[in-house]
Image (tube, rainbow, N blue to C red; front, side, top):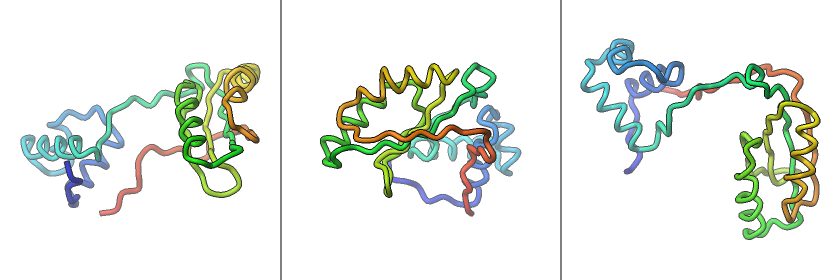
Length: 157
């Protein structure tokens, strides 16, 4: 389905849902100034077009025993398509990796990893990441504390 044009009402819907994905359609309709039926139609169009990809609960990593966040810069020996695809496929299977970005600049990838301890990070590094073929260098930085952590995109109207 082609991406629909987004108007002010759609932006208001997205704002509300980014802050509370558990709103009922009735609550959402009231907050954005629509009646429930047109509100639901708009939400469905946003979902079907892929603008709204999914609904999730945001879990506090520290509260569930994952207080260590590591940011890992990975460089590959080759930037040929096969090497990039092989790396991406392999790291996608590691549950510790929360995000992986193909980058410009001094490294090829930036990974965000969460683990329960430094020992667990060492096991992840030794048993998993260093065993991925084609890696030439790995540099890790550990987050001391989050300063800004958002899930809401800064949507313009």
